Length: 407
Image (tube, rainbow, N blue to C red; front, side, top):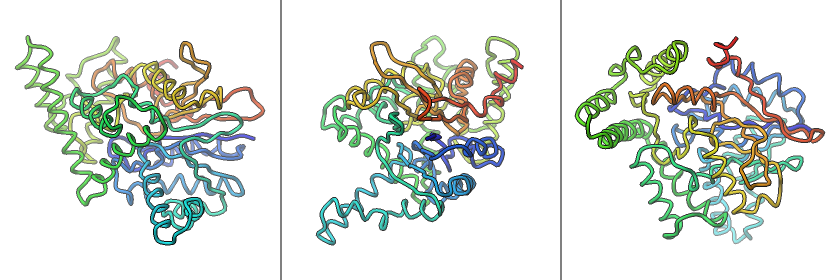
């Protein structure tokens, strides 16, 4: 039996390019769906935190058509992530509503979710002929445990602005009743629900995504001041520079962006910066691509060292006892594809599916290089019960500027 695990397509997100909306990326993925028995969608299929639901679901049309065609008589398993966690929250509400309205037991109400969950009915309609199952927060295939990985956030060495980190920490403490870190599955769910429902509610308002853009533009300005305050010798100049660049895409000059270690990498960075300026202008995203902080939604940046997220996730695994269920775990969330890695002192081996959203860190040339090295999108993990361990496939590696330059 063979399963293909894919995650973080982020359909509809204004924060980046959802690559599987494009025919070119679908053509890259398609051949790898031929010799598999099931597909595991490991969360963040739809970006309900940075898109209206109608837009997110509509953007996924090409992938859903491809999966329907390739998986006739086979199975798809959906495991929610944090960006589509609202599905889990809504189904819990439906269960409670059924219990209260009918007097049925919680078990019977849960059995009727296929009839009453809009999300389950949507997938059943769009994937006609495919057996669709819903699991959360984990799914085990061939002895390999699969989970999205968003529970790692409270344990991670946090990226982003000081204000973002403080706000995130405050919300976690509220969700946990004043305690510092989650200890149980219910704790982790309390944290993730409080965070994601705020962003989901805002995104679904008539002008919600525009409001988000405005909030993040404001956060960029606040971050500019905070960074300047750390460098008293250049306070005035730093504030002027960062606030000026935050005003809009025309204020960013790719030609003046700092170069990396060599002429090729510096050129790649400037070209990527210019493309991102145009993309942000087209979708109305905050105008400064030098700042990629999204308060509450991202605690680990894709360009960060992988060890940060691995250590945090390993802590989750041992806190929840998943290390007693499996010695091989596939997760996602960080957008950093990894294969057969571990953490010192841990008995578990880890794989990460990466992502299918192009969302480069352009805060500096070095950060961009870190993104290319650690988080280039377009990968899947294959779990084959006849093989000793999962296999990471980087399907778009040939399009990575680093790889192209090396050829």
